Length: 348
Image 1 (cartoon, rainbow, N blue to C red):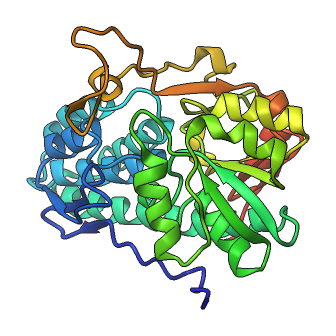
Image 2 (cartoon, helix red, strand yellow):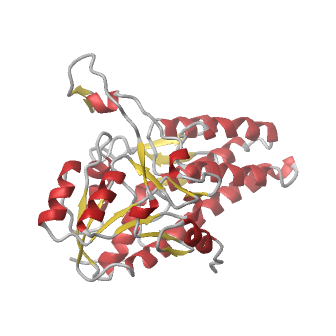
Image 3 (cartoon, one colour):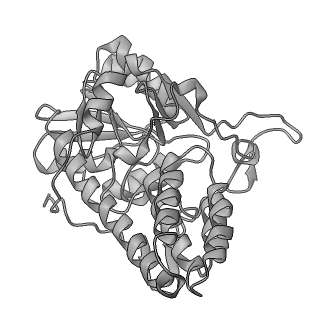
């Protein structure tokens, strides 16, 4: 099978039009490919909150464009009003906060007469940065894998979650091109099924051999099959290198440790939150239980059933083999090595 070049992104899922932002509605995939149009910062916030778009880096990019939309009338007060609206859209992904802080600095850095132009340029620059980060992380991460690896991934940390080819899936794509990855096992990722609906779709479009597994199959595969690595993304990394990611990641890390399998986290430096000392301090989003007791609107639990829906969990850094960032690889994953890598200057 022909292996597509690493820089080739077959999925154009976020498109900036100057007066609007078009985003691929990820709730409808893989059955329907349809774009939603955001004309205001409030539209972007709603699309983020409602999971039209998702994935920590993409949430940050969308927020930057949302701030640019708020600046179209060249009024700083509009930008200042939009910022808290966007910030409340999702509480866990720190890329959102990073993007808003950067855009606020740009908004306050010059006269109102040039506000719209400055904000649009800054949003585009933020998007391009994430594109470049994706490519560099993919290359650094693939170098860690041995030839012919079978890997497990969880949730969706691919192109749909970023501006480019993805974090975890970007590393997998680079590994596939280099002959390092032989087969991928994406976990379905209950309750929102990002692995089944999104990651498998991406892998198949890229021509990468993949077999879907239910979340509770991972331990059996690690015991009975040759699994060489677990590769995941992250929504926030604490100062001590604890990793917050989609619910179920912690369990995979424990399983990988028991079976002697490397556990890799791939995330840009914008995902690191040095103001949060430990993973236990990261706010864990709790979403509607409807996503647990129903699938696509069809009930799967008795009427009136109670349920938990924690969107994320935290993996202690001791279970992480390495954190791959665009600035370098953090290994072993701890606070000292994390800070050391973050201070590395990477030439564009």
